[in-house]
Length: 73
Image (tube, rainbow, N blue to C red; front, side, top):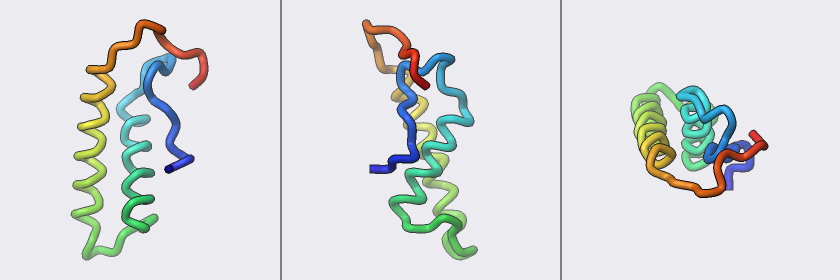
C-alpha cells in the first residue's frame, strides 16, 4: 500500500487534477521502484502516470456516495 497516497473520494473541496496526478505519480513510483526513472524508462513511466490519472478521474466521477463529502482531506 502506498501510504503517501491520500484518499481522494469525498474530499472537500473535491480532488483537483493536481491531486489526482500526485496520487498517480506516487503509485507508479511505488510499483516501478523508481523515484525518477532513467531516460530509457521515462516515456513508459510518464505514460503510466497519465493513464492512471485518467482512470482515477473517471473512477472518482462515477462513484456515488450517500454519505456526502468527508471533512478530512
